[in-house]
Every structure is written in structure tokens, then in C-alpha cells.
Length: 281
Image 1 (cartoon, rainbow, N blue to C red):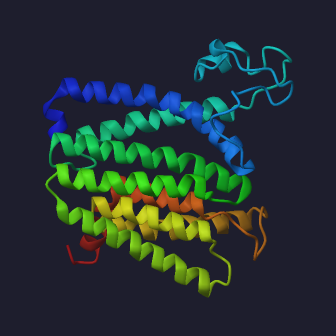
Image 2 (spheres, rainbow, N blue to C red):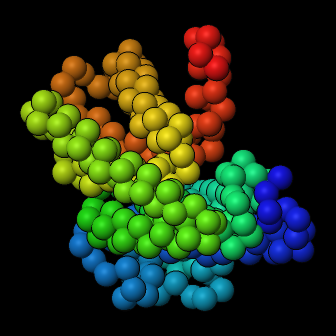
Image 3 (tube, helix red, strand yellow):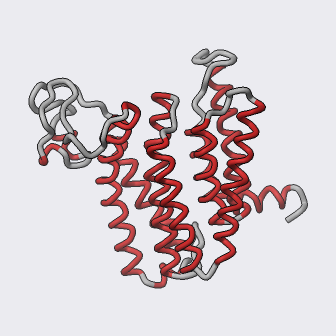
């Protein structure tokens, strides 16, 4: 149990607030996924139906619920509304609530209550960056700087705050080492692979290294390694299913992010199990 678990009232508020906030943020992330690849503003104009151009009314913009009440169709022209919208909203809400619960229960260890809140904010920011990046990379094979760079700045600031509030200044240095190490690794891979890794992958690697380094060496190593395992398995599956050919460009960003989350949430026990199986634990 974490320090936050000793304050059940605060813990419950954090989980509920994170989940509800995640639903609202998920709605915004849908806008990010749709507009950022096209270079459009995510603030203006207001959301509108892509078919008829009618502005989305406030009552039709309630996460998940509005899509269900509208029967998955535009109120004005009856054009179908993709199920991706409510799925992204629901997934973001569940992910945010789950991360809050992970911090409260100690799945993500925290030394102090204040440090736990800072770590939770860090994880929520990283989740808010991970979801649109994964979807955009799958759709457009891009990892836009408009998401990666602000995410790196926000995560870097929260790493410093969390380390200070948790009384773990060494975690700040570890995060910087993690970011630099993964940046260097992917930079070298980009050179060796002759374009197999893009600039977006390199920048995302630095962001992931910062986050993983904040939580520990085991998290960093497992999270970095898991990306290649997942990406390799995905590539093999696509080849077997004949959905890709040798030399086909396969987005790697989603697997980098999935590996990072495995490292964050299960890196320590995975590393411990591996060392024990090797007789080193």
C-alpha cells in the first residue's frame, strides 16, 4: 500500500476525479487525433460534423453518452459517427482511473502523499500523450512534434517535482540518464537501419526514457526491451496474416508506448522474475 492509501478519502477522490476527467480529456484527444496530422488548430473552430458541417451542440458532446443517445449518427444529417470516438473516451477514462488506483495501491510505488500526487499527474500526462500518438502513428505513420515536444517538457517538469516531493533527487538524474540513453539507442538504430527508425521514434524514445527512468532501472530496461518484443511479434503476425510484406513500413510508436507502460506497471516484478529464473535473484 502507498502513502496515499493511508488517506482513503483523498484516494477515492483522486480515482473518481481521474476517471471523470479522463472521459472529458478523451473527448479532446479525439480532436487531437483528427486535427494534428492535418496541421489544424485543436482549439478553433468548434467541433462540427465532417459531413454536413453543423456545429456539435453542447448536449451532443457528453463523452460516450451522447454517442449512444444519438444512435451513433449526426443529429442534423444522420451521417454515421465512428465508434472510435466513444471508445477513445471510455478507454481514456478507464485508463486514468486505473492509473490513480495503481498509485494508491502502490503498484506504482510512491514515498510520500505529495510525491504520489505528482507521480499520478506525470502518469496522466504521459497517458494523455500516449493515446493520440499511438492512434496517429497507426493512421498516418507519424509521431507529430506538436504532441511529443510539449509532452517531453511537461513530463520533464513533473519528474523534477515528483523527485523533489518524494525525497528522491536521485530519481531525477536517473530519468535524465534514461531519456538520454533511449535517445542515443534509437538514434543509432536509425543510422544502422537506414531509415527504419524515424525522427519521431527518436524523440519519443527520449520522452519514454524520462518516464521510465523516473520509476527505476528495472522499469527502464524492461520497458525499453518490451517495445522490441511487442513490435517483433506484431510484425511476424502481420506477415503471417499477409497484411504486410518484408520491407513494409510498420508503425513502431504504438509498440514503444505499450512497452513503456509494461515497464511502468510491471517492470520491477518482471525483472525480479527473470533474475530469479536465471539464478541471480
